[in-house]
Amino acid sequence: MKSNSILLLSVLSLIFFGFQFSKNKLDNIYMPTNASGASAGKTGAPGESNCTACHSGSTQDGANENLLTVLDGGNPVFQYVPGQTYEVALKMASSPNKKGFQSTVLTNSNNMAGDFSGGSNTSINSANSREYANHTSASNTSSTTTWSWSWTAPTANSGDVTFYVATNSANNNSANSGDVIYLSQHVIGEQSSTSLNEIVHPSLIGVSYVPGKDEIYVSLNSISQDEILFSVVDLKGNLVYSKSLGSPSLGLNTYNIAIPEDMKSGAFVVQLDINNQQLTKLIQVVR
Image (cartoon, rainbow, N blue to C red; front, side):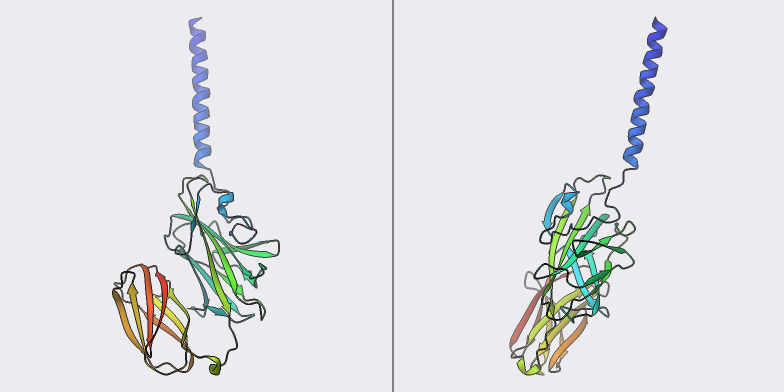
């Protein structure tokens, strides 16, 4: 009788440790279901859900986290030419070890604005007449600093378009809990055919930090050839850097301005002084 009890105890022990071993193996091979990109419609755009449909983390304002830039020949643009193809670059300011994203672009009537095509580290899927750029299984870690894809702008008279972006700062716990989802919107205007005679004052078209180049790109319309003083000021009002941009030409002017090596990451105000007028723009620098 005693030997039977010992035998039964041994069998139960083997079953218990076998179950634990199997469970540990399953835990170790768990793969997030969206490691290669989310299903369509998770950007937080009108009529859509966002990444919290699958991840149980919180939703945060991504205005300073999701750094989206539309590029033409490597330079940021803030107005699109209808039908032209651009590169879209997206970078997360925090650069988490595990991450993901999805983005779409819509007109003011919430229709797809143009077309997407994938880059080397992104994929494209679609649903309900909208297209979506996504991370891939090879680009969901910190080794990928920037996602990029192609965007062909919509036809003329489409007006302003909005890129909707959802990014996931994942905690890499091999589960769908504890992640932070950042939602943001990025508006790009349609380039107008306004003539120089219709420009009545100098205006900033756009200012942007160019990731990877350590440059600030400035685009502005000028009605005079007065000297432009370019300055970068921190949020405490301290001057970080300044230089003369010389005399602009009449109309559209663009500048690529290298910033000092010791300038840290953070939020700054770019300031342009032109003939007693001051134009300012808040930017985010990520180095």
